[in-house]
Length: 285
Image (tube, rainbow, N blue to C red; front, side, top):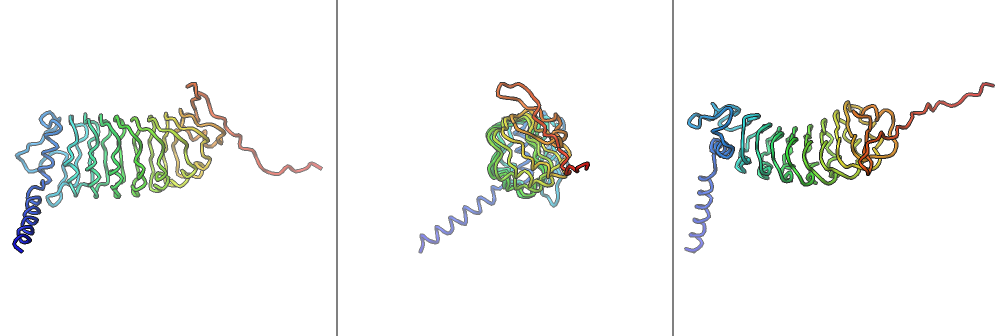
């Protein structure tokens, strides 16, 4: 009995110690400041002041809900502790000099609506945990050095409207789950190393207004089902290896009128199918 009592006390003591060592939101931001050379930021924080006075930090009920440090000369790695800002709804670190990988811990930010890590020097693969952010509307990771494949569970981002991952080194095919992301409005995957075919299921993305696969390694027939996307205003799927016939409507929609490259790397225009008038021929007699 004495051993059991001792064990219970040890368990409660352990939980108590964990609770006491949990970082506050301010302590987490200090970790970010120290990890990204805060003394050299364009707009610095006075760490002796309340975090409500810190530039780019929005606080509600003593919890950080938004962090906007774009173009502020952050240099270094994104600390994993940032994933403990449980109330964070917007994280904008656009146009800095951040390197290293995207912390998997950012997948813990369940309230996040906007994640913008674009225009940095981030590398490695996009962590699959990012796809746990079911409230995310904007994911901008463009102009980095990201590699690997798009997460297979990308389709779990059921609220996503903007997916911008262009100018990276992403490989592999578009995951099947992508074609179920019916809330998407803007998809910019251009200037990567993506390959494979484009599924006719792209017609499921009925809200799509801007679609760019420019400069990848896609092959096969361009799905005519793209014509069903009535909201599509801008498209660029040129400089791939698509082949076959496309309608004049699709060719006109594409920014470069379906300019493709063959196996020798030579650019050519895809064959455009002439839309024939299908009215019956009436005899003159």
